Length: 212
Length: 212
View (spheres, rainbow over the protein chains, first blue to last red):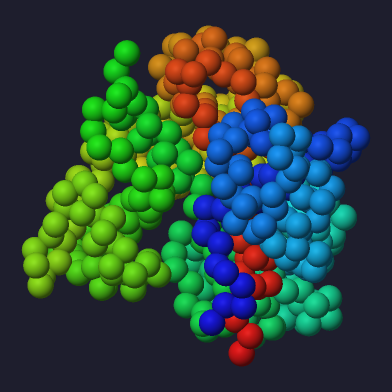
């Protein structure tokens, strides 16, 4: 049973977009923003924004807008970003390397505490401020650093084995880029990222768009 | 006005997952699959699968399952993958490099016809079978090769400029990894990919999961 009213996945997916833009507004010294302005910046309709934010009780001030810092704080609490989750990335190929340097993770409060690989040309390198350690030491590093979320960017063939190691080390959530279903205990939350979905959506829209 | 009944974004996002798994089944010589089995492989409930597939008229055979090759063909047509879209990637840093080597794109029928960068250490390199050309030649290559979809993996600061060049060259759809809204004409379909959404969802679920 959930403690709070469940919020739909679609809303949960838009919240980080709102949050990141609100941080930019905050940096620019803007205190209040209307749903129209926010919608314009994000390419989302103001109606959708109002509906999303109503889900968790952010009403703003009628005719004026939302208080930027207040809204930021509410989103942080809803998503749980105040925890400053510690993450570890297994598989420091090009994708893992890109993620290790992805500034938005830090902006959202995620802290990269471990990078793991099997390749001796990569082990020992400093990537975005963290030194790559052998994957054989992952369990030890996860426990020592208190890493809670693991990202899998390894080849598909070893993804299950890496997930097993992460689970054994006490990781609670896994973001996987491997194109297969991972078998993990029910208590572990797995989110599978798929880089081909965006292209497929574009293909769908270009195929089905209205004829002019 | 759309020609066909609009299918929800959530369904459109699941179709490529079904498709990729059906191709694996096809490779393994499996002709028929039940929604239960497919659901088990994908971590999606059989009810959801049946509901999704009913959207576009794939009913399968009651008590038996779906014909794998027939279903593949239907999904290809729904998503529009029979077009074998030609894609170009601008920004061959680690993320662009990873995408240029991402096998699923090819499996879905997307063909990478151009890779573009400004860095002289990268220009001229062969990445996944395509030689990186200077971004100043992008318009020429897009026209010559008939590239229809562009992927932007450049730094945010130049993403709008790159999008402008893509539009000028006649690209119809853009997949952007840049953390900002691109201003493009209405006829261009833009899909913004955000690698931080998966982590935010994990954070949300770990924060709000039922207490045991």
